[in-house]
Length: 558
Image 1 (cartoon, rainbow, N blue to C red):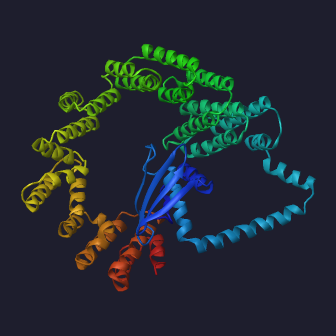
Image 2 (image 1 turned 180 degrees about the vertical axis):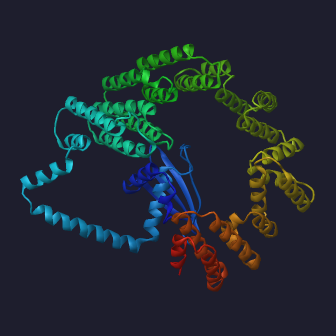
């Protein structure tokens, strides 16, 4: 995936969100941290950091964002960064395109300027036709009415959007879910732009309620509905943030509306969204009266929520976290600590308690608790890893080197590469012998982390001989490491590259696949030269002469 074709690989709704962030000025800082390495600061519900590393051809070698999005590999903040990089690297083409679009817009503007009002109205009415949704959108956007009428029109528009996409079957197919969500998003933009804070809340509430109901009548395989729900909650959060300087009575009204929303039956079965709304209520707990109401509500929910299954326990834990934050902020230290002690069956409070033990230097107690919880949670590898890391830090504080080494190795083999450096610091004998023994263990390790950790270790040690052997066994990885290996192993790199190209060609079945193969061939040319590239192209043309689309794409390579 490159910065020039990333749109082909990313869900359209994520692309739209990212593009909105890009054009909306949400990229507030950018700097180059090395050759083709960039760090972006992007403003969203919080400020997030995106890191992108490219090769000389614009291939995206690495991309990461520290936002909490976990529904896919690429978030909207990364997409915004990609669009910015396209702007940076294609400024001349971009300038040409902008001029072309401006010329096109000027041409149509000149035509419209010469029309009468009646002619313009006729054009608009003709375009609208029987499209009820478009009609409602225009009325909502351009008519001037009071808040009550505005809300009625928003509800009317939502209903028309739902009818449009549900159709006769009463269900929105996967192919139409994205378009449905896009039209619903227009109402969220309306909420964002509305100065009347209560009207803005009401519009966002309408969208949120319909979005949650849409899980029942739309195919959300692509996660579009979930993103719509998340965006609606984010807009509500932005509106709450805007209310921080309001009169206390207005704050009470906003709190009341949020609390009432949290009681809605639409959240039955979607408790995590209910908790998101309760967290927004917590923004008002500096007012004692509201604090008491929220605590009472959460305590009621906790009392009446079953913890017999893991999901129930998870929801209870999230509710208790809100109570803990309130107690920590507005209660005494003793009350907060007692609350933690009372809820040590929950992972969040276990972690809080261990952090307290660290502050009080009770390292033996940490080791004892961590071992106990590792045994209790052995069916949950992520939790076991967390308790092991805390136990490791306690060993470190107590300078228990032997225990540190044993546990650091366990953590490394569990997939935590950072402990390789810890291990290296602990080695007192022959480091070369240690490295070679560890390398062999990793190569024969059956766990699914083994190959990944082995690769990271040999890269850390710049072990090019071992890396070349790895690439020979895994030719699909050649593009990642060709530049690193070409000076020492040029002939071997070329042979592996050829094997990779032929594998990619054999698994190709459509034009997009063929274009990817051609992209590999273009990069191969920089390693092996034009003559070698031509030889492979000719070979592929002979092998796939019955695939005209492939032949067409191969013939375009220069």
